[in-house]
Image 1: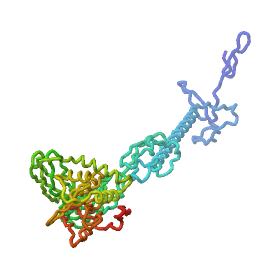
Image 2 (image 1 turned 180 degrees about the horizontal axis):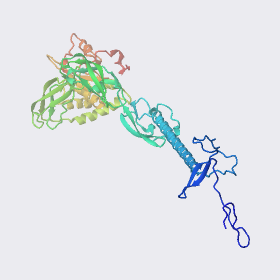
Image 3 (image 1 turned 180 degrees about the vertical axis):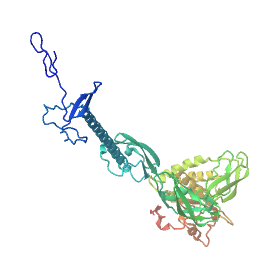
Length: 510
């Protein structure tokens, strides 16, 4: 039988098998009751009979004084778990924020480092040597992490060009350029010129010296004037370098108008024999007032060396200004006379005599003096000789040691020829009763008169006389040395007679 007031169920053996009844803690101020349907409802406990007015009660304590008597109702722990998740989210957010801030700092740092870099640098060719430091406006924080794939020492800075390369900053490549430009014009100094109007202007570059530029330089004349009339000018030479930079330089010019033709000397009538060769250029002297080497042309197209006759030979000399002059002479061709002696035979005899009267080391003056002296005192004068040619006259003079002025003059000439001394023969002109011949010899670059022919009443000879000295020589009231002066080169004007010892046939050095 159950007891509603704390009764105890017991087993047949007398033990109490009933479990203790767990009662719901009673919340103070509330009473649990059941409605007719059996549902529980909580109603407030009445401390005193209800009067119809609300009863003001003491607030329940948050924490009961006696937990054992009034154990607290168990509360769900989910709010505690929610608090830990928020903290985790906050920590994660903080980490993300820190990473973002760190990344932003790194980016800002790299941007600041990159801002120091200049990707383009321009230098003047030939002035400075480029280097990596030119590409930075300040010091990077970690210079060891800056790399460049260009060796600046290998760059030819004298050549205008564009050099492309990379600069790596912290592993990131940056395209860079080096511009080598040439904006400085070349420099130079003028060289004063003296030219002839007929020559035309020389190359402009040849008229400028001390040219300086990093590239190759050319030059041209800018607006050249007409210089054909001669006079003094200032011509503008333009210096241009490989980059197109120009400099203008004023060059002074003295321009001479050359309108005088050359002169031809020694072009005289001459003779030769059938079968002989003719040296047309022998004894021909061409001079010009300006041109040191006028061009001489010889027209002998009418000459027939196989037939007797008188033929014209024309000599024409032209200077660099185009001025020219011509002289025509007669060449007489005849049969070789009986007993004709070839020139080679004469020269062979002349070499034998020259070897006897000269010594090694002698000057031209000394050799010529020995030749004139020997012929004067070794060829006895006779008025008439059997000489139909100059070769026969000279050979007989050597062989028989006799002859007249014609024999003597060619005996001297043959000796001078084998000695290699330039010479020619002068004939008296005009004359009334008799002709005369003497030698004209070029020594030390000057022409002098020499005469080795015996002269009655004059026991000496003439050596290295100027034309003035020769024409001023008078004996027995007459001179006899008149000739066609204009047909021969001008003689020396300064006397050398004080240096000559005629008795001992020696000459002092100048």
